[in-house]
Image (cartoon, rainbow, N blue to C red; front, side):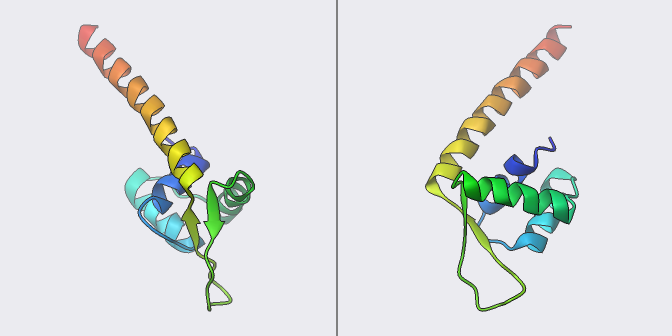
Length: 96
């Protein structure tokens, strides 16, 4: 799985993170390394959809984000669809 939006939402489901922390977390749990351009492009789209929001910070360099209630609902729906695909694929492999 390499959809940056889903990976970012999954990362933020654990708690607030800034960009570099998301890159490292996503690399750990999904074995995908997002580049800064990909990450921040996806962050912009997620903010526009109101699925994530910036969190106030005293650090001028790091800007943390959090997942919103709408973002959680979207992530839950996407993960349910992925779960159905995985279960179907595994069942079909067993039957083959």
